Image (cartoon, rainbow, N blue to C red; front, top):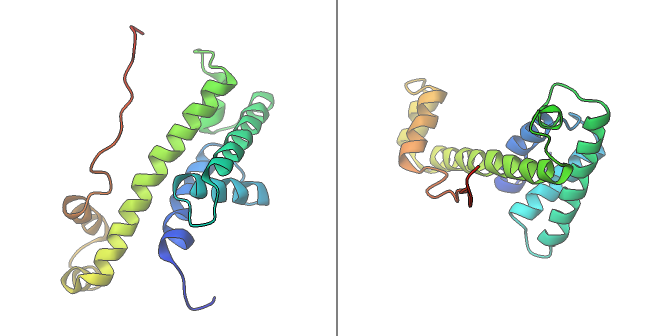
Amino acid sequence: GSGRTELMSSYVHLLPMRAVVQMCGMPVKGEDTQRLVDDLRTSLDAEEGEDPVAAYVRVGDRLRQLVKDKRAAPGPDVTSRMVTHGAGLTDEEIVQDLISVIAAAQQPTANWICNTLRLLLTDERFAVNVSGGRLSVGEALNEVLWLDTPTQNFIGRWAVRDT
C-alpha cells in the first residue's frame, strides 16, 4: 500500500512462517497467530532494537498454550498428531519439537524465496527466461537450489545414547 517494502521482513519471512504455524494448528487469522508469527520472526532474525530472547520466551508460552488446547480438542494438525501419538510426549517435549519444526521449515524456505527473488531482480537472463515462459517456476526454483542453495550447512541432532 505504501509503494515500498522490505522484502525479507514484509514478505519472505512471513509467508512460510504463516503456513507452518497453520499446519501446527494455529488459526488462519487472528491477533494471536499474528503475534506468534511476529515473535518467531524476531526470535530467528531480530532487527535492531528488538529483543529475540523475550520473543523466544513468548513463542514458548504460546506453543505451550497451543499444546494445552490441542490436548483438550485435537484437530487435523501437526500438534494434535504429536499430542495423541503413542510415544506419550510431554508438553515441553512437544513445544521444543514444534520450535524445531517451525524453524526447520521456515528458515530454508524463506531463504529459498529470497534467493529466487534476488536472482529475478538482479539476473536479467534468469528474469527473462522466467517471465518469457522458457523456464517454469519449478525449474526456476530448482535452478536457484543449484546456484545459491538456502542451506549450505544445517546443524543436525544426534542421539547421545541408544534409543
